[in-house]
Amino acid sequence: MKDFNELQIFAVVVQEMSFTRAAGALDISKAAASRAIGSLERRLGTRLFERTTRRLRLTEAGETYLAYARRAVEEAEGAEAAVSKLADQPRGTLRIAMPVTLAQSSVAPRLARFLHAYPELRLDITLRGGQIDPIAQRVDVAFQTTRPETDSQFIQQRVTVVQLGIYASRQYLAAGSALGTPQDLAQHACLTLTAEREGTTWKLHRDGKAEEVRLRGRVSIGDPVIHHRLCLDGAGIAILPNWIVRAGGGKKHLVRVLPEWTPAPIELYAIYPTRLSMTPKLNAFIKFIKDVVP
Image (cartoon, rainbow, N blue to C red; front, side):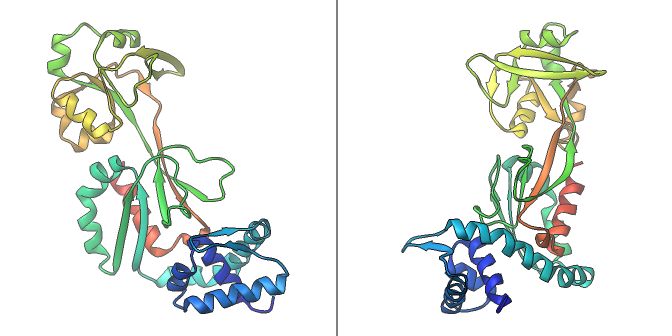
């Protein structure tokens, strides 16, 4: 390979899908980035990008070359990154995407303490749920509670497992019918994350046995923090992360319903583009998430 820098520039241009942003990330001029890609394309004898005035798009040859380019960059920079991580401190900007519930209920209350611990670190947080493509969203790491695709091109790290329970207030339970089995939940005002025409199904587990309960939710809203508030106010029964109940001081007011039956836990994953993304700043933030989401 005549010029390894060209390969590095190619990888960053793909990540940013912009010569301007790639040049900024590499601290070179836009013209220099463009010349490097042009030189690489001439040497390979093919176009790697389709260019328009508004966007870049990889050609088929570019897609093929990308897999090899990323691997070569990782191997070439791996030793340097491994050594620098031993002594380096978290610094610079970390771009993060995470669900709004995680940000509001877990991250926000302790984020100031984290920032005080790392004064040279800046955070750029985007609130977004569901499956996230870190490259498309231009973030360093995405946190999600949906299981990543098995053939994903990204590194996937399970950060923690969130245990769930069924909760209601004493006030609500005192006014409602008795609860002896999971099927009794169908006669109660349940708070669900989604609304479906045929109703919502809660799948509960006990001693290796699973039971499904078909419900028509009294309130359907995709935010456990709001569910917690509604439970405290006696509006119904909800599946809640156990840590939200503890952190919200709700243990004095909420009762664990059918405690021998548990919903399947939620797994929280960190998704990032390559192993080289595991920098001191990302290490520090993932450790922070593990600490605040027990």
